[in-house]
Image 1: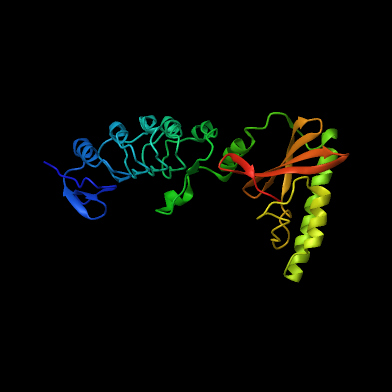
Image 2: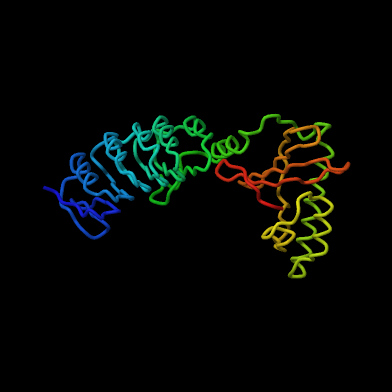
Length: 304
């Protein structure tokens, strides 16, 4: 009878044996029966690393019985399609590595149902299509990695840069309801106000770069003129950080979104990053009322 250490929190399989907590070896074949016995005995399991397994999706009902599972690595498991990952949706699983498995679009769709999942690596999973990727763009707080450094196949990635951009666009703009073009007459004044702020901030930062420090009085005046919220600790103008050449040099406005007659979101992009600014008409002046950036499909305050 197999005996596993009951305090095992990490379970791996290498060279004909299960390894508990990187120390204790339990010689046994790798199959569903021995895996089930390991899970039954190891009630404190949190991490499972099983590569090149000889079985398929039948393993997921077993993993579903690991209440503390937070890391699962199943690399090069050619029979695993991911059908059954939905059984793990209520586990505290944060990181899932499925490189070079037979994961397909349905498997990916089930994976994103795991509520606590933050990262899934799918490098080399060629059954996942671009349509499958786009179908899960609704899922916030999730990083999908389609590349790794294990070989040329992994470094190439599953998707083109254009496809990755389309996926990030879908995540960033999915909440936009009343999109309007930048040349809409109603947007001209708020667009001009925001662009003038960008230009003023770039000038302030270039001067700070020359002097080696920022001018507190100058940035206080700039914010008082353009920004409606009170200064916040850790953000400019309380923090006098600056970027060489100016933060907003390559930040391009993309579109607007009408909130009310006196409120518009203006969306911008810079390289692979997404930003939006809430412009509000206050006493006849367009002021910046909020500034947010989009990370992993979720918008949050990012300051100016």
